[in-house]
Length: 130
Image (tube, rainbow, N blue to C red; front, side):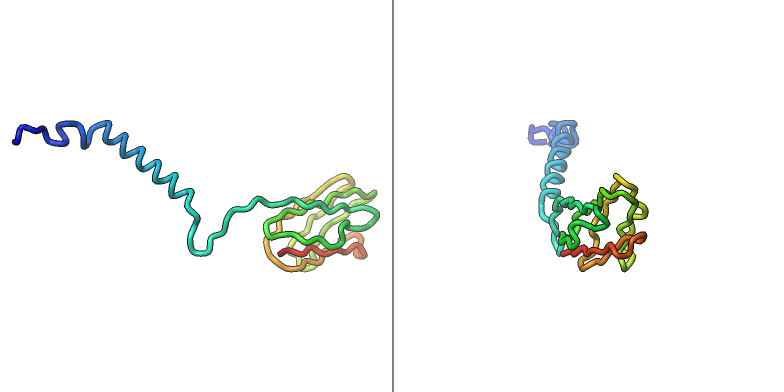
């Protein structure tokens, strides 16, 4: 019309180069959006800490352990007989932990959890989750 080719004829719209450029723009936008903090009460992802409770001499050591929500606790049986780590409110129960064995629990709720060994009720301890 005016001696200039239309944008589509010049390959600026609808051509392979244009589609490739749009693809890169979308990819960069997606990466940028994924790096933005989430809104409306979402929290950061924080690496959990692993805490060890040794079962030895018919005791849980330490007898009181304070951890953060999302942390992991591993009970390691260093005693001469099998044991369990069973929460009094049934929130967790390791089942049988054989001699030399271990069991891991991830804290899912805040509060103080009393626990004991089902085989040896005198073995008691507390897990405090903040």
